[in-house]
Length: 556
Image (cartoon, rainbow, N blue to C red; front, side, top):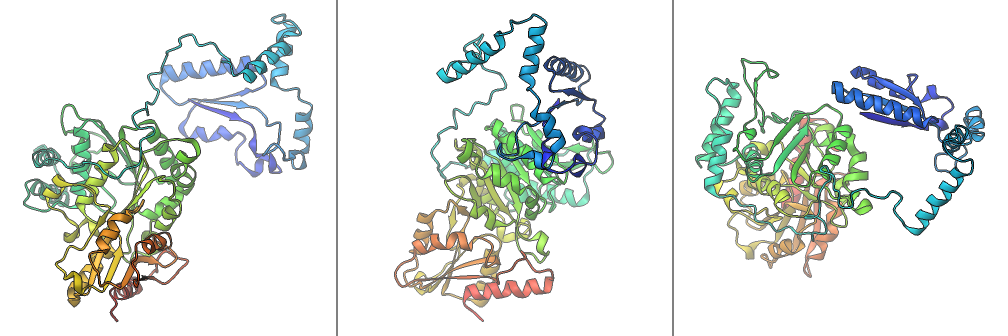
């Protein structure tokens, strides 16, 4: 049921035809063939009558219905504006309008329902109650609580923490893997999908390392098994834009709308939480706004929105700026929504490379959310579990990869999922002589694997690499501990794929500087500053990427 308080808010334009192409603002509902009731806001009894009729229609037919209450706005846009400048005829009439309350009071007095002086006395009594802080309506049941009320009591006022036991026993992981790969004999998978499911079956037995898609499904499955519900929405999230998730499986011989879709995560166990997965329309602002509201109302449900490419979140930036990043600071409104934003420079051009990490870093303050860039399957597993197992509820921004979804070096052994936890900082993984290290590279995301491969190729023994997996809030202590392992390191380099004026550099350089020792110098390796997130030619991308890697490693 949709109720429009139609204040004709476009008064500052010269004519209603300038801000709408239809006669009524509610004409858009004709697309879904919903009945639309138009009623004058000056007639309270008519509004009540029409509203009851709309409720009856909704209850009887279970279909959308619209009530358009035609009103007017007495004052200007900010209550100091002068709308008569652009709408003189309308506001001459409004200036002489006594107001809806006065009209209705006079109508009741004329009908003998109230005495002539009673309305004014009611107003005085009402204002007196407000001044004295008294209840304006006497509650009938003093301890009544709506069954739809959201209980945030167990999450409110929880101190920010990163620590959480996210490990899952090997036995349970194997059970979950069996459930995720148990496909009915008469369900015909696409050959490529069948290969993925067969590989996941092997991952569950430890014969293959766990890749990103399997780790993600195991994280969801483990939460569902623990009684949490999981909800995912976004373009193509069932399959996964990059053919990695396969939370929805499609029979090749049956219609998807007619029992042709299988959801393995709905078959985890009898007592599991609910699993919802929606391939939503290409309207990021509308979908993300809905998921934000949904997440604020369901603190014990993992709510995830995934952009098809991280860049697509551009279309929902108003929701991110005004609600997700600042809702807690402005209104004390908690939210545990997760954003999965595919990010990484693969040579796919300006609109498919950057999730605009710099925006999220600039909006980071007051522990308002977490911005993470996990680099392995084990890390995304523990990160998603951490989001629900901690009592705190903060939005989680995840720069997810593309090429790493199938990179062997980004896989994890099943035992890593059983150990945990999510590591905010990951130190050097190769055997290096700490005393020989003169150069330490700090980085995040896919560029780490480019740096690692090149260092191994060139057999550089003077370079160590540290991964920052949580960019905000950054774990300064853990980073400092890793840095202290190299007493002879003089050059500390922040390396990023993004242009110099983008990415995390400007937000992180002061944090990195704080942990430097005397005699150490901080430098940056990045693409040249650019108005565009990335170049448009694959060949130029390759050249730039190599230049970034070489600059970070200190080679020419």
